[in-house]
Image (cartoon, rainbow, N blue to C red; front, side, top):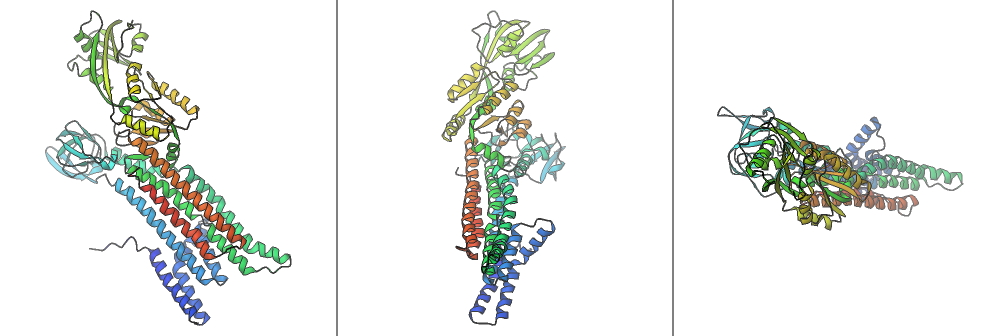
Length: 623
């Protein structure tokens, strides 16, 4: 078997080792009094070994009109140092620059490896079951409706629904949750999860490119295209900064001596050229250009490993300044699994009739409340005509009778008298007569209260609920969670207007968390839109800035901490690099200390320190 080359023995390592040994040989040759041509030849050999690839890249940059990149600056500095007789310093510039390149490549490789490990969740092969025969095929060849077999230890190839079998699955690769989840017939499986102890037969619900693992991969890959404010600043800064420092170096190395010569003074060409070359080395912006994007790259990768998917560094900026959090109720703050708690018929109305008519009208509705009502009368007749009333309920024809099932607002709009004492989740009327109401309950998620408390400790000023549910259903949830505000009975456009008002108040970024297709416009409008990735609709996930794959709201405070830490690391690198470089630029330009060794530290040393600091963004487990 062919042995893989070590990832650590890169060309930079070989060049540093070769150039370093030749530099040592040159210094020893010079120390022991060898002839000048021999000393120069060894120094030149050291420079050629250390600088050959950098020079080649500099030439390529010139050919593509990218003249003022760091490779060009290092080439000018090292060759210039040789011209003025600073041989050891010229070689050292290249050696330290290569060492910095090596650290950069290793840091980026480590970040990419972390993300690749997360993304390596979609299997290439699947087992298709056709007429009782199993066939191993490419996962891309699966079609919706086909049947697949998932064996113990296999990754789920595509999003599917279990037809037969029960056991445990590991969803950590997608959600960051380490606790196995129990599944059985009827349970849905996301691609990329691992079947632990069971053999499952499942129906394909999505093709490979549209399944969960592919969507996660696409989200993380696209995230690197959306740059943060800091990254955009560095890009704009480098475009102005690099030409400016090159011009300053020319003025120091040539302009100042010419002015001194014109004034009748001795120009001291060598000294001023040395200062200019030192100035060039110090000014190289690689510490900023590398470390700031690397910080956000690491933060996005680290968050993804926890089941938190940012769609770019710019979203981290907004989340780090969050001041208001708004949550949908059903499926976000609550479980989204409704049960009928009480059926209250009006005077003279039979309870069984009330249930049967309500269940019939709700036959075609996909709302979880409708499912809870249907379970009371599974054999109820199908309606003849059904008309959805957005955000209010349903009008249907059952056995020739016009049935209204929905909010009190729906019945009042249709001219039905509703007694003042009627308080429930769903109101029912037939042919203009009020029949009664059904109270449906939805349990608060166990993690919701803890999430609200943790967000408050993070400095979030206001936390509230925006829901289409009735006030009498929303109020107990808001009270149990100690929310600052609750707005109920909101249609999708009402939620949109409410978030617009909050944004206009300018009390920090406004975050909205939702999961349904009706939440998609509000998620897109908010400064930070958050979708619950497992139960969330495709529209909500597409519109969101942040996707929580585990569907657990307690990931939200962690997302805020990751965002704040990542932005803080990027700012630390900007301030540190600019401060050190500015100080040494002043020292070099004024001649107080124009040592090339100090310049090398200002370039390579600062870059290495900034890169090591940026790599901290990957470590998010303990946040």
